[in-house]
Image 1 (cartoon, rainbow, N blue to C red):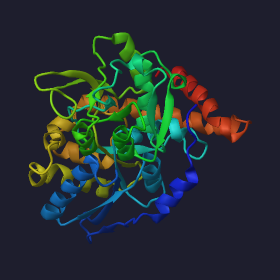
Image 2: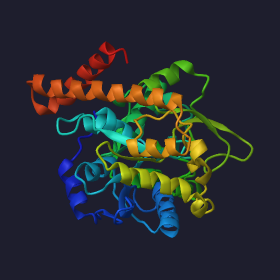
Image 3: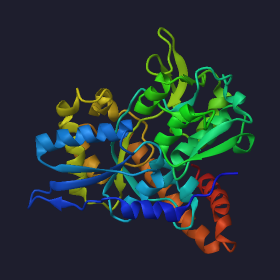
Length: 381
């Protein structure tokens, strides 16, 4: 069984966070202050966004306030309630856009997210275990303790997807709850879990690898097409990749794993076009200021970032900048329109589902999952 999310504790966490409002320079459309929510302090995404924020401040004079919050639901809530204008997400934005996982509740459903830019990195986010663990394949996880991050539908969806790769379901493992991504990774050191989802670019992963328990990655071979079909049915934005260095990788060896672009900067569709245009422009054009500050800088370069097969539509303000700089292509526009159509189908289906559902609210998510699948199939998506 999936653990139940304690929404009251999440709202309390949000209420206690320091959230900053927007300001704008007179007549220019360029904001004075931009609040963006991100992962907790100590996470590599927080470090990246902070470095980019410093570069933007130095070049453009705009202050980007990075707000660390513990999990994706709280970050999405900050965006939904207007406490933050932007969100640096890795996978939670996808489940929010799709209205699945924690966002399948009546109070959520598919959200009108739009992206600005992403880091199209060559890194993994996949199952990690202690170095001396007898777990060598996904199938070996049967009966084992698997990390489950409260309020992070993106991570949890991938946990379930990787289990499917090995022919397992959530019922085949023992889920261990953690309050956030960082605590879940460190849970390997404490011996609280046998497997957690992690990235080889995460500082906490380095900490685990240097600890007495050590670290290794469970291989997810690209040649296992049947396994990948099961995985990508649940997490279509994840693809095969190979890592050759970093924590958990022995010198001279390579490990076939899974990964996806991260982080992705998103906002709501209704966000001001000029504000989105300026933040997109500032991230791209302040690159020299953070090119040596973060290892992932090459993946933020626009010609690399824009090659990704993005999972939610771009915001009109970002498209305005990409067209202005000659980066927007017919192929991007075609994919953009396909995602806009998908959003319309999902949001229409969710509205109908709320009207037609007559049961207890606790059973709504399962009903919505069925209606969602039906609507997408009928639309030929």
